[in-house]
Length: 343
Image (cartoon, rainbow, N blue to C red; front, side, top):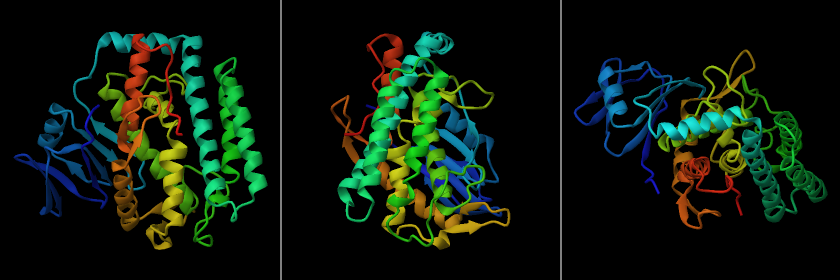
């Protein structure tokens, strides 16, 4: 299994990145403010960065270290990318599979079934740990709906039907998301999922987490030789990392939603970590991104036993593990793609 290396996050805007020997140099107004050895980094993510030197970009590309540029709010902008990794035969198989509706549907069913399974597990975990603080009958009803939706998803006759099942199940799941917020209720309320822009603090964190997770999935797919832009559930669109978005579906509830709930319920995040814009948008500020990312990194280092591989892996390696299993399936080494089902 690949080793999980460090990710360098540049959360303060208007920083410039350059290379000095084997070090990443971070500057502001032409003054050096920090430097970090490059050899133990696998990824650099810069939020609102003013730029990066060609030398640093070339070094990252030549050593297969990811350099990603994000907006201040966490929206993906661009990434430095070098020579394509992997076996051309694997990618050709991926493309042929994506062009075959039946083969694509087989993979997509498993991915959505896993998403619904993990969403249901999130509700069940809340029922187990906080039965006295929630409407248990309501959660039981929603959990049963998701269980039924899983059975429907695995037999969906086509992709459009599958997307409809997933959309309805997501609405049911998010209908009790606010009930899982047990602390700071006055400042952290969830009514409906809002994306561009997020309209409350909870949505701001969900969007940020999904963006970070999508970046991890993109890197994982490329590491095993797959094309992150050609998916089986999400349709092709210029600039959209469709396969990465497919893979993210398995991790939304576990890696992102539960993480956001934990930040709120443990009071790790606070109202002052957000900026409220005149247009109604709510975004994490510089301090908020630092708090969020520090906790995110700590979470990535935690270990769990992978239910299919039956070995301990770090949370941060889960996208890589699933990308590897998907590549093995496409090569014909596995009879079916085994999605991540948290137990």
